[in-house]
Amino acid sequence: MNQAGTHLIADLYGCSGLDDAALIEDTLRAAVLAIGATLIGLHLHPFGEGQGITGVAMLAESHMSIHSWPETGYAAIDIFVCGTGQDLNQGLAIIAQALQAERQEIHSIRRGIPRK
Image 1 (cartoon, one colour):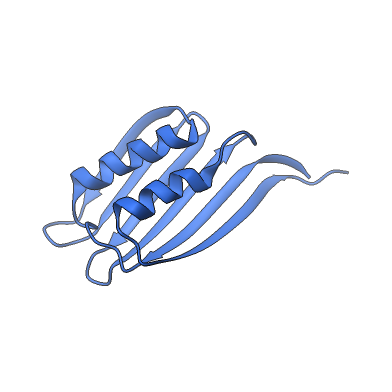
Image 2: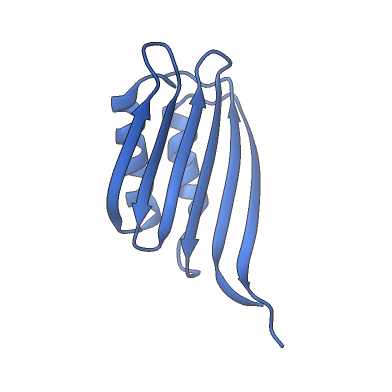
């Protein structure tokens, strides 16, 4: 496979701060910095007091996103970065620590074009 990049998908359980827009914004910015990506823009949509947040960081290399459910302590994380030079686990570690995740399930997928 001609690797285009890596796609990291993570489920975080037992999290806190999932309704805190400032925390989530700061955390996404720190995670982008940790993986050495280039932030183009960041948008958060809080669903209301005590409700979850959807956040997307647009990267020159692709994207990073979070969807949170504070009522269950669950967060869905998605990090896709083109190229092979970044350690996406560093970014995920920052997110998991900031949200005080008790447990993580991580799937890493190599993305790309099959060789002929």
